[in-house]
Length: 128
Image (tube, rainbow, N blue to C red; front, side, top):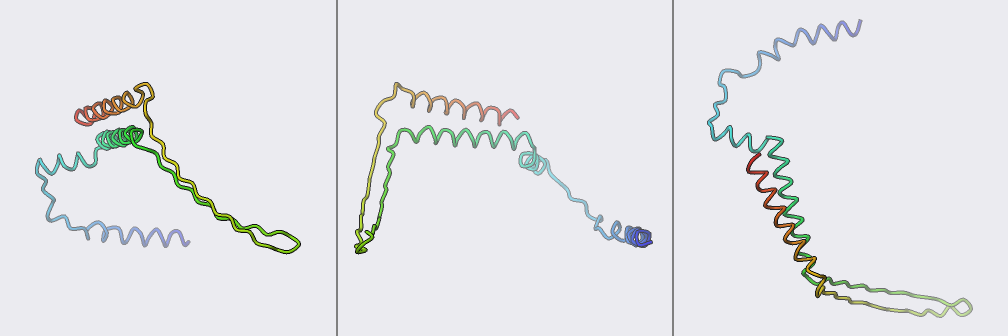
């Protein structure tokens, strides 16, 4: 019984919902608007754009091997002995820096491959 009442209420309000929309002025799109909308919403273009962004990020990752790697570490400790509970504090710090000198042109080839991947992704984006 409740389902019949609910269904009848929905059917009675359906014409109101249909005719309450403003259809007097349709939206007019120019050719430029259509192309902008297609560029923004087309799934193939979105995928190609994201692959291009991924290739650019991969290039930045390849560039990072040319820069030095720096690390800093600090430790603070306290120990107490049992019979007289004497506290002993310890402090230490560590600073490391590494720079790659040569690895058989591996970093140069990785950077070149990343640049070629960007060109390929750009080509795929332009032809999609």
